[in-house]
Length: 348
Image 1: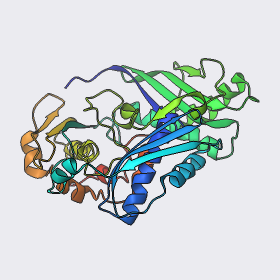
Image 2: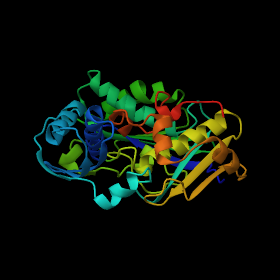
Image 3: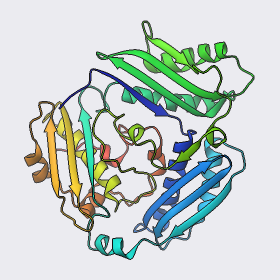
Image 4: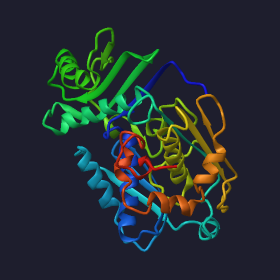
């Protein structure tokens, strides 16, 4: 397994346009699951310049108001501008349903999961930190620093296990200077997350100002931050997004299972690093492929196949994925949070 020594990872705040869409999609999913745990949901959200479009497929006994949910999420994030909202939601295709009904995968695809022993959260050094920066930035705003506005991003560059550059871009009101903003975020955010920042290049709002943000400045789309959601682009990704999808969609559930298995391989000292991959055919319960390799490239697939069941229904049961727990996962990465079911450590 190739491990990059020099790399850059990024994260975005909950007010980033793409993440607004992810949260709306997952909030709709959660409401469906609250009312009907067997709901099948595939909801996409698109936002741009005062317009929000919610579309997808939904088969559920739940009675939901997607427009009301979207407005509530938008307000809770911190936005107050008016949105015109259009919805187009239909039932799941019967062609897909006939395969899922028998316990098969809801689609074909390849999913990956990774873990490493280099940090306490079993994620690459730098990745957990960059999520802490964006979460900390959002927390400062909600804790009373009203000159900070919802949209924001962070980036960390690592060279030979040392942070060399930190970049923070944050939307702000027009009554604060860039000098003040830079000093404030360095003292109240960067130093608190990183500690010693000697020899680290700090960039804060390098364009100079960031007054317009969210849908006012940019479009947003569900599933467009898949590297932020997973492993920062450092390890493979099958291409399937998570948000808005119930656990019958292996894009989500199998990726969570791969992370669960990889983390437990490392936690049980069977590897210092583990990369787990699985592939499915639509309508088939048994995976087409299961592979796992350690940091030396040695296969651990025989252990994984013996100890873990990758059939979709088995994954759902093991990780308890019919709970309405998904909106919170839509921000600051889906992995590394010890309270998530797929982050639990068990004896292999």
